Image 1 (cartoon, rainbow, N blue to C red):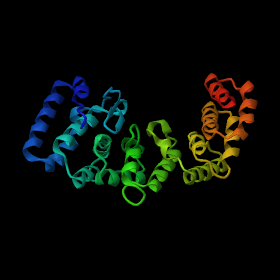
Image 2: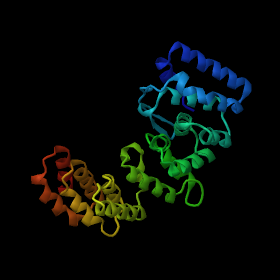
Image 3: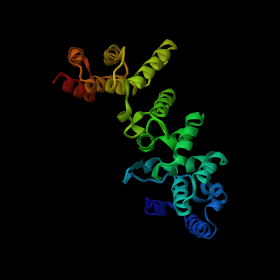
Length: 279
């Protein structure tokens, strides 16, 4: 359990601090069944302003509090106090408004992986609300933890992870916000990402930059050609991702392409990766 109060308290007004103290007393008296009464008040009473925290690690949870708001942190306090069942936690999302759903999803990042995690990660796969997808799946290692706990036949599976990454690609969200996401790179996922990239190119749209990082970790048919093409792309971010993909692939047959690109590469960070490939 993570004590977020030292981070939350300095950003609270006196009124918000008093409300939270009273809410905790009420929960102690009435239990988790009272959470649906308190949650609708959080955003308005505590505030939507940024928490201003840093990235923290608590046991196996890795969370970037810079993405959190004060009301998200207060919601975590209440959930930790009440220790609701999976059904109650899930209902906070299902019956909440946009703000309540965001708060319920954020709290998952510090919770043990359980039924509520799997249910709500499933909900964000289906949502069209980007803020909810971000609150539940990004700025922490929750998704990877869920795969670790779920195995292949139950919980949040590798197939679920693949769909999650595809949704990131569709929404053009940076992989760096899904901590440790590259750990579950696979040839199957690379095939899916390359097919999606081809669809984007056919429609005259940009390819998700992190495609190159995934396929470099787990190549499939067409991976090498796509990585080589990425080295010559006009976008700096794409060239960097492609260079990192080539580096991670470790295929000696691509070294010549990295060396050939190096004298013409204007960006220092990309040059450093190309130089590492050339050895």
